Length: 401
Image 1 (cartoon, helix red, strand yellow):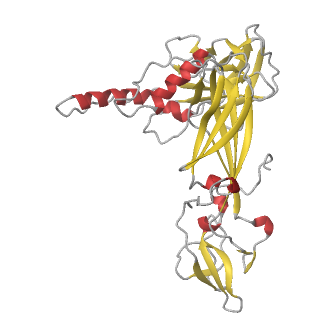
Image 2 (cartoon, rainbow, N blue to C red; image 1 turned 180 degrees about the horizontal axis):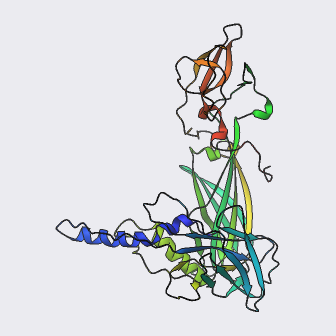
Image 3 (cartoon, rainbow, N blue to C red; image 1 turned 90 degrees about the horizontal axis):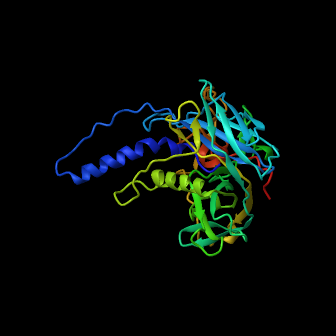
């Protein structure tokens, strides 16, 4: 996916706020405008019709007000069909992620034109314009370079026919990280015992995906070459690169119209904040209500192939002086085993040994033995400091190597 719904939620409000900011700065007297509350509930359509063997994923959602506590408003139970210019149809089904519809192995012909037909639960029907399927050139390489304050991941690609010119990128990150301390012991409900290997909570895997618009044009160049185009910057104190990091970069060829849509959306959402930035502009996509052309709809549906390439970055490839910054303030304390103390609160999220904590008045994890004979003494720390599953999973991804 090229975009995320969070980008759209701000779209209708940033324009109004920016215009008022200009008036306030230019006036000699204070001016407090009254901004009318908006009840816009605009349909947002995200995705690309994939004509390769990979999945076609279309996401539907609704815009929400900036002050709305809901971070997402998925459009569920819609009927979505991919159509070509010859009226052949290919249905998508809603996945276990609300508002996300998909299908695999549609075996679409890359020489044909395609569009999306959407019918929402309120009976409205939306149709995207027919678009050509763009064949995306392969990614030549994904690499990284060491910068003063971190790592920059970049992509190299080219089209020998000079026919692509407009590119979109997104990525999926996975990294191995570890807790601040190792917990060597666990409770069996009655006593403290050695932590089994299958219950290790020191090493985990974290994941994230791109959430901003990453586009590039080679239209001003003589050759259609993408050279070391930056994808993401990672700070040298990030846990992402403390052990091993992997990134899967996806490249999609865009039409000129699609590129202009995303470029305008990027300027409207990511480059507003001062009077020197680009001012908000009208955003027109290619999805329309077939019965009411005046209804605003946000989104641009493209068709084509997607190219992907993965790389790994290990700790040994980075400067030795880089030290990760742990997200919690962690200390080690001492605990004495007291089997006769009352059991822990059964409503607490974590199982905890019957251990009296001398200085830490919250649940914690046992790290190591200080004295084995009664009364046993242990070192301990807060759960977030010794349990990596608070922020990740211990299950290794299938692609990991």
